[in-house]
Length: 388
Ligand code: PMP
Ligand code: GLN
Image 1 (cartoon, rainbow, N blue to C red):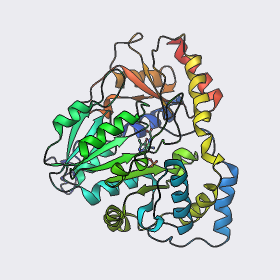
Image 2: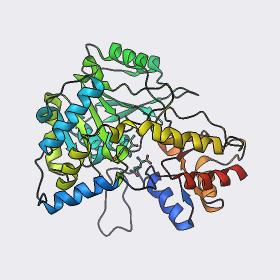
Image 3: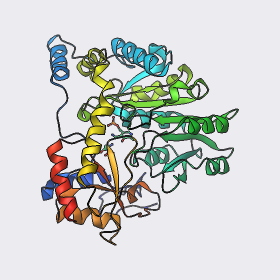
Image 4: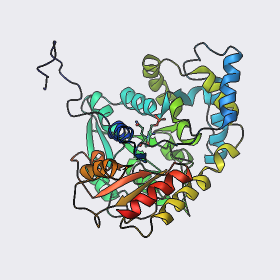
């Protein structure tokens, strides 16, 4: 166990190997160096004015006290309607949906409420940063499986091999951060075969459900009854409505899992921002507020990739999310962390190295760039990247 000698009182860290997140680090560096920030995933444009007006309206109407623990019923109902329309999945909003402080809290709560000491949890690498520390805080054991190269697909044969009597959960993120990969129907079928007749729970992180490109389609776990009965599925309004700073998301799970989820949820935050929930409930009524999102971001992805097509960076267009992986091996032999820092300090474009998404910090000479940015931001960044 590690402790730090300068502390006045010894601290036996519960997360000795965890440091400040790479998103925090690179965003801070971008700010310090005045670089164009394509690192941390958030838009550099504002969320809709009418959504902002709705929050103000509900504050003015006095919706300023605690919301019900599970969420404002109007929002729960509107989410249930949306999910039924999109994924052909009928939910009982009072028993199967819980509003959370972003998907981060939904993921944390899902893992904490169901993972016990020594439970094994399968995690695919590169993995979003919150999964592993959360598993570790619950005493669980992450079992790492690397996504196949070069297409970042799930190697189902490895999954079958690594499942043991201790496997309690598999975490799946689709569309996938940081690779942009999207699960296919065949993937879901493989998964169904693997978990059939097991006690394995599934945690689906679907925060980019509305951001998929070209011929790809987001097939939610919620559209497969065999998966749904054992799944907790997390979503984020921040990604869909361009308001990551509001930190509102939700978790969908069958009643027996939601019951456990809420036991923990009530002691993490109890409930989530009331006026924001009322505003989101209204805003969700209009399908156009999320249906156009894929086209909106595809235009940005295509603009960015077209602008750097003659650069020395190499890429395969992202299938979904608002991240694009670029391979810089024709430009530098530096490791990805050093190259990301150099690109930020010297060239003034910040990105995210991929090695922190791997348990062994493996470096594949690729960086992640966020294209949830104004056209002029992407054009300025591309101009710089073309000169590298
Ligand atoms: N999962 C993934 C894959 C993400 O990229 C993010 C980041 N935004 C989250 C979860 C967390 O979402 P939120 O900001 O709603 O907490
Ligand atoms: N999800 C965002 C990203 O991938 C970061 C969110 C955070 O900083 N925790 O960049």
